[in-house]
Length: 303
Image (tube, rainbow, N blue to C red; front, side, top):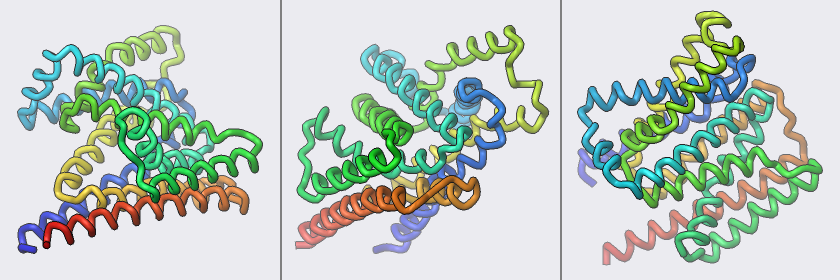
């Protein structure tokens, strides 16, 4: 491996780890806003993200790809769907954090890779290997145990995994670079979000300007904290192999789990630990299978 290639890999790891650390720390950002309804926080996140991303697009001169997407009705329709699904994912996560369900939120992002595998099988006809089939089965057993032990379906985790998985599936159907893609999604949702914020203000229960400058800054900063990790991830992922990114991605939910248990004092008893353990075993099997495929590919290429 050349020095330049090694440096590129190192930067890729740094950017990608940084992105997942940021996503893992998201509960620390949303918690101080717990007095504000999740729907209002979501609307602010969409509007300020659109403004911030527009500034970045202008600074980088990357409006061209976005204009091309606007000329394709099919791609525009898919992005209308993906923006709706992404907004729902954001809403559920913000509500979960501020309602004291950080641990269950982390579970959603632990099982998300396996949901992606399942969606690929159902909608794209991708075949599951034996390890992948076993991993999905183990994860299903973990969810079943958590449902049985708690007496209720972990709907927050399943909703987060399903919406983010559906979002990834839609983005595969209409590929667009991360920054123009986020711009298009937030631009499509901004009119509704802005109208909702104006309605809240007219009704007299709008949070902005009424709960102190510190919360106003957090609401405005939602655009920055949304876009920056995404840009870091895009910069890192293109320098790394998919299997490496697949292993790094568990940093995010691991940090969320630690915050939920250690900082916010959410329960994590033996029965919950058993359910998580089954899912972690599934993820380990899934990751090892992916790494083995990469190793086989390298051996084949070297022959």
